[in-house]
Image: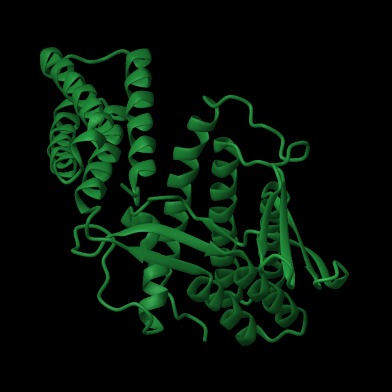
Length: 334
């Protein structure tokens, strides 16, 4: 099973994870402090089934912990870290470095443990009573969401290409491109239970010096642990978001001409997206188009004149915020 993914795919994944770290890092510093999930809980939800006077079943759900937006960012970042450790573990196995592979597997499992510590938990109590009011069945268990976004709405080729390469190789996904395609991935979900189980198998295989079994488990973590969802309708939004990202890179390099070109593409794609929305849902898109247009005009007026570092930083932060807002628009139900 060794060498199923080419080394270029591994390098792409590492680049992708660096991109995520770059995008998530600065943004989180601008967030208000997250609310601790340890000390808050949502109001209980009670559902009752059965007719009055007969057998009745009550299901009471009580969630402990509330995820803030910053917590969601943490979860997505840690999910990305998990796959970095998976990829590096596979690389270490191919290099016959079992010690390093085991260390990377353990790091991946630690990241999953941290995710579970952040995610809220829900206590579900089920009680069935007979017509005389006597309980004939009772059950209580604690459940937790096991599917989290790798990064909501992110479809950049540098992020998803390695995972898609692995899935194509296994004949699970055929002919799918991440960007510039009729089918666009707008959501990438990680199945924590699946990834955690495969990392456990990999750890056991490495302890027993069964490197081929370890490689297979790590590959299955990539194949079965990631769920890709596609939607044609979000294509203009995906194009706009990618153009915004390229504009950000151009601004960082003080390349005003390239930044203007990318901003123009973003504005055009936003207009296409705006046209498919109901009239009462276009306000946010119109506002962003106006902001993009203003930056375009500023860059045109400045021409090739160099911009000072502080202004580049301010503009970079603004474009990053646009990028994040665009991510939040994917899959919205109108």
